[in-house]
Length: 153
Image (cartoon, rainbow, N blue to C red; front, top):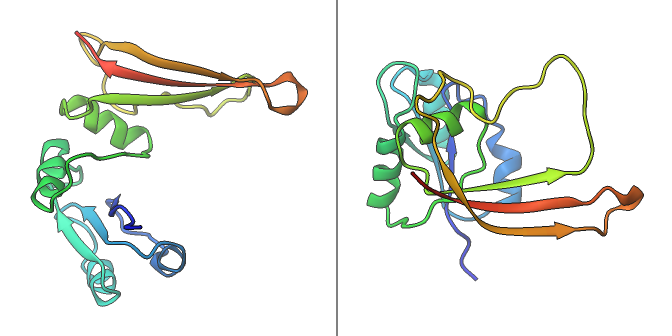
């Protein structure tokens, strides 16, 4: 079977490519910004990784990310991203579906972030529930819900 391409978005390029290459053997591209450290860009390229710049300054542009991946033949992008990238994809209106998993356990503490790290969306971005699955097979009666949401108005 053909592995899907793996695209990693990183501003600072502090990536452990060796261990990733040991586990993942498909096509890999690293997406970064113009201000990325030149020495790290060159090290990635020497390791056989294509590096693409998608924005001037210190932030990636979501539309350019999608356009660059589309030029390489990728029609569907599944993103596992942190809160800054999620915010970028939402703000640049390139996210069509959102998958969430909620574990039925409560964590507490002082340092928890929201899903999207950045300025508030005004108006809020709407989603419609597409599917919901409840998995009750976890120990201690702590199930989890898998949800998919499509973009809405």
